Image 1 (cartoon, rainbow, N blue to C red):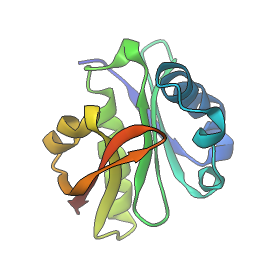
Image 2 (tube, rainbow, N blue to C red; image 1 turned 90 degrees about the vertical axis):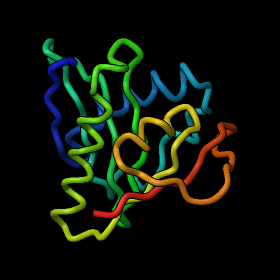
Image 3 (tube, one colour; image 1 turned 60 degrees about the horizontal axis):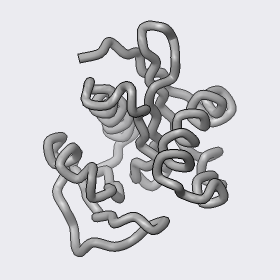
Image 4 (cartoon, rainbow, N blue to C red; image 1 turned 90 degrees about the horizontal axis):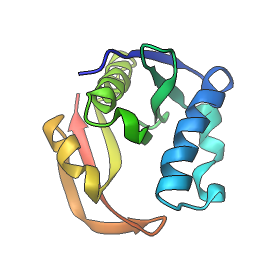
Length: 141
């Protein structure tokens, strides 16, 4: 497992690093149009960015005011090292601290097993978001 440091903050303080990771994963790797990646919610979210030993941003995620976790992304070079789990657990901890009863997210099918291992349960049928199959999931806090 990689040693990462997860930093929490608002969009103005973490935008540069969060945006770089999201751009690489969603726009470059997954071919999601850039205009679908950035939204007005970024300014209202709590963001998490994971940094490796070289202080390079390798993962990110965000917690929305309504308890949704989104924009979870880990660079290919840092996958399967526990980075995503560290980010997810930190965002869940923050949601618990502020009094949220549960967190929800829309998982890409390829990430569903990851979220199941972290205690999430699937809700409902598959659907497409940005041309990619997803499933709604939730986790009681």
